[in-house]
Image 1 (tube, one colour):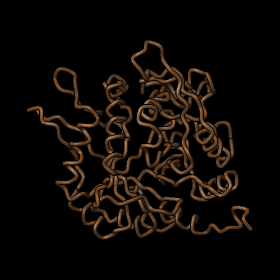
Image 2: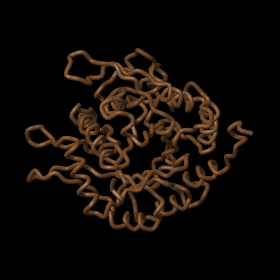
Image 3: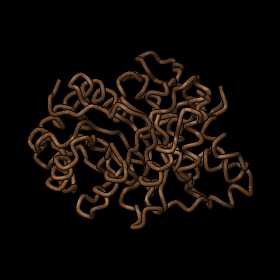
Image 4: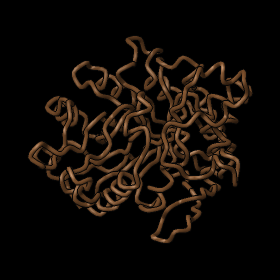
Length: 365
């Protein structure tokens, strides 16, 4: 076990924020407000012109180190990917390092920089340009993610993933095409099928279909410390349910919680050398499940708005349904968009709502 690596905070619900600007003071404020995990976006696997494998980033690592040393209770992860971000690179012959070897590259990078990261987060996504190579995954990319994950866990690192909702969709109809694995990240969003819906999304075609299930199947759910479901994906199934079907937001969150905890089957998974695709049951325990939301930048049309009280109510509902156990926490994108006033800061408002919980909320008195 690496003595430099911090453990996950022991008390749920966790408050997890993505950030890229370490100099603005907003990360410091988010931590003061109650964030206990910061995920820094982004770092990238990189191969130089002379075929050297490295980690590339524009993050201010010196300032991140200052923040880490100032707030010793906070966990810091480094995220790979991002929208329009690069996927794992290849050499000129199309090959790449294995996930295990890429993990070694990261470990050396982290050591050289003073062990500023306690682990990594997978956030590989698609691209605005539908003709870009990153508008679909390759099995090579997903294998690198899975193998890196298992090696990272063996080295004592924290590992998380943050799939867009369509990439790990617990509300897809069982046995349907929507519950079938695909490498494509250029699909129309599954729920928006009527002519009226199509008028709303105006040709948007950037959804995936159960692609992160492959990584879970290969690495094992036990290899992940937490899994954050991005309900704020553009035109996600969640935003369809609450904006078009007028589903109560808490009920919509609970449908997803129940889907992940109870498990759902993804078909068409190329998990072995056999020519026949296989099925895999995605099942995420509450102890690893994180609800991913947007803060004030979301428009409520393309990107869902979920207020902190709704998240509190969903957490209370989860604890009532699951005999005192709630989901692990809430993740939001992004600290960079936090406001100046307390009521415009997601971290502050989440902490206020969660601090207000008491045993009677859970039916314990």
